[in-house]
Structures are given as C-alpha cells and as structure tokens.
Amino acid sequence: MKLNLILNFALCSLLGSSGALAGSSCCGPDITSRAYHARLLDNYIAVWGGNLSLIDTVFHPDVVLFVDSFPSANGNGSTVTHVTNRDEFTAFVERSRTGWKEYYFEPIRTVAADYSIAVRWKMHGILGSNFTLFPTPLKAGASVTYNGTDFLVQDDCTGQIREAYIAADSISYFHAMGLESVTV
Ligand SMILES: *[C@@H]1O[C@H](CO)[C@@H](O)[C@H](O)[C@H]1NC(C)=O
Ligand SMILES: *[C@@H]1O[C@H](CO)[C@@H](O)[C@H](O)[C@H]1NC(C)=O
Ligand SMILES: *[C@@H]1O[C@H](CO)[C@@H](O)[C@H](O)[C@H]1NC(C)=O
Ligand SMILES: *[C@@H]1O[C@H](CO)[C@@H](O)[C@H](O)[C@H]1NC(C)=O
Image 1 (cartoon, rainbow, N blue to C red):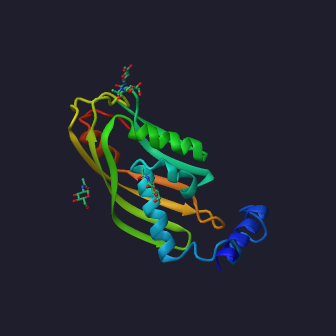
Image 2: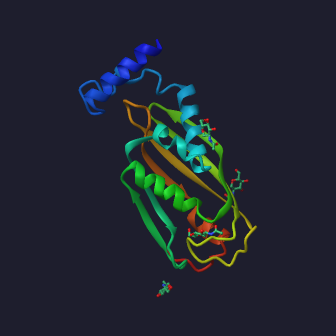
Image 3: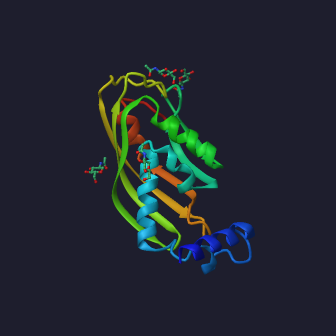
C-alpha cells in the first residue's frame, strides 16, 4: 500500500499536477480524507507557530497567498499581500512572526470538504522587545489576540496547500496593536 502510494506519487509528479490524470485517484487517494485534512491543518497551524521545517511538506512549491490588508510599515495604513511561491510564503510567515515573544494560532472552527479547508482561528501573541514591523504603542510583554478565517485549497495531486486566502479581522488586529487611526 505504502509502495503503491509512492509509485502513484512519482507517476503524478512526472505527469505534473495538470497532467492528464490530475484529480484522478492516481494522485494520492486519501488527500480528501478527514484524517488527511486534520493532519494538513495541524501542520499548517504548526508552520504559523514557527515550525518552518514543515513548509516543504505543507505547501506546494507554487502556492499562492492573498491577504487583503496587513499593517503598512508606517503603521497608518494597510497593504495588500500577494505571494506566488513557497519561498515568498516562508518569508511572509517569518515576517509576520518577527518581534513576537509568543505567536501561535488556535483553530476555533474548522470545516473541510473535497480539496478545501476553512478554519476560523484565534491568534495568541505576546509582544517581544524587538517588534519592528510597524510602530505600536504597546510595550514588550503585551498580550495580543485577534481572530480571522483562512480558506485553503489543496493541490489535487500532491494534497499540499496550493492556494491560501487569509481573511484576518484586520481592523480588530490594528486596534489590538494600539493603532487606532489606520486607514484601509
Ligand atoms: C516540527 O514538526 C515536526 C513534525 O511534526 C516535528 O517532528 C518537529 O519536532 C517539529 N519541530 C519543532 C521545532 O517543533
Ligand atoms: C502615514 O505616515 C506617513 C509618514 O510616516 C505620512 O507621510 C503619510 O501621509 C501618512 N498617511 C496617512 C494616510 O496618514
Ligand atoms: C532585532 O531585530 C533585528 C532585525 O530583525 C535584528 O537584527 C536584531 O538582532 C534583533 N535583536 C534582538 C535582541 O532580537
Ligand atoms: C475571537 O474568538 C474568540 C473565540 O471564539 C471569541 O471568544 C472572541 O469573542 C472573538 N473575538 C472577536 C473580536 O471576534
């Protein structure tokens, strides 16, 4: 069984995810199972929690990510993030984690079907002494939480995350960071 999966995976890799057999059972018959979805989500959450060694397992090399608003460097506006590959995704995770003493996400609600997973999450953060992403009046040690929703789409061959849409509650985040006059 295991060998079969490996062979199937190799075949699919040869054909490419848009190959003739993409989406057929050749590409990993279990990638839409409840167990697979649960493991993928655990690993995704772990990446955001700082386990970057899981990046290659979790994300397709050509993963795309859209985040509509993230505080801009000067702290008085917001920027759109559009990532188009795994290295840029890694950089975005690293950038997001920079300056936090603690930074992890707790899944609150989850639903998964076919090749998609939606997760409502709560971020738990404790500010470090070196937070430079944008100006904040908060001091080191301040505890910060906010919520958001991610919609993840798997590659139909490898099962890895191929598309991610992060809809953080941005205004709540800005406010939690002490930024009261941010414009969208
Ligand atoms: C990262 O995740 C892997 C796989 O679950 C685990 O073996 C490893 O210990 C984790 N590393 C850290 C730093 O948590
Ligand atoms: C944001 O701050 C910069 C300086 O850091 C300033 O030039 C710009 O006008 C400000 N924008 C808004 C919308 O307040
Ligand atoms: C603070 O962050 C800067 C830029 O990322 C880094 O060069 C520096 O080593 C950090 N200092 C501490 C004490 O973490
Ligand atoms: C964030 O999620 C938690 C857990 O579901 C909830 O208690 C809290 O009210 C939420 N906060 C906001 C601002 O939505």
